Length: 191
Image 1 (cartoon, one colour):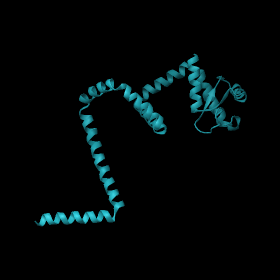
Image 2 (cartoon, helix red, strand yellow; image 1 turned 45 degrees about the horizontal axis):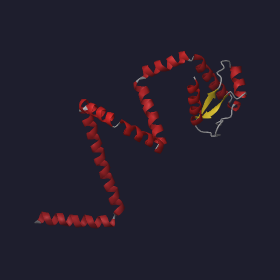
Image 3 (tube, helix red, strand yellow; image 1 turned 90 degrees about the vertical axis):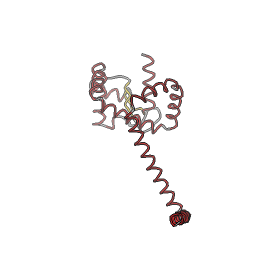
Image 4 (spheres, one colour; image 1 turned 120 degrees about the vertical axis):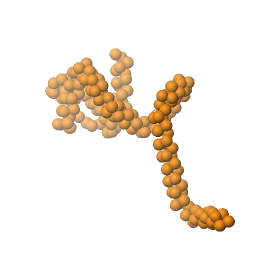
């Protein structure tokens, strides 16, 4: 009997306390939810690692059956959360480069030897603009924005004097990432 009375007393006491301290009660509830979530995530991680061989074929089969849904969801997510997707893409790219350093170095070297003149021209353009930033306006030519700017080369001169002339004649100028990618796509379609 004493145990039951004790339990009842505690229940009543906690009800009164919750009414008096609603904010603190919400905090405690959130902390306990987070703790449960963390435990569940840890368990799921361990389970996935231990049963990789069993889960991979199931996942592949599920993906084959639901490929269209997944792709549609990904497109919608990219539109709704552009900043998150950019951050995620950047992190995953950095992670890939760290894991596959030799492969990424091979690819960049292959691209360098394939388009050596373009690489040299880009490098020298950066050096010229670094030395004399007044040579070129640091504004997108299309939309006049000042964020996320990249050089766009209509021609790729190799000599420093030719690069300066190209900048003055507006053959080399700044574009924001958005407009630069559009122009690159058009150039690729032509070739």
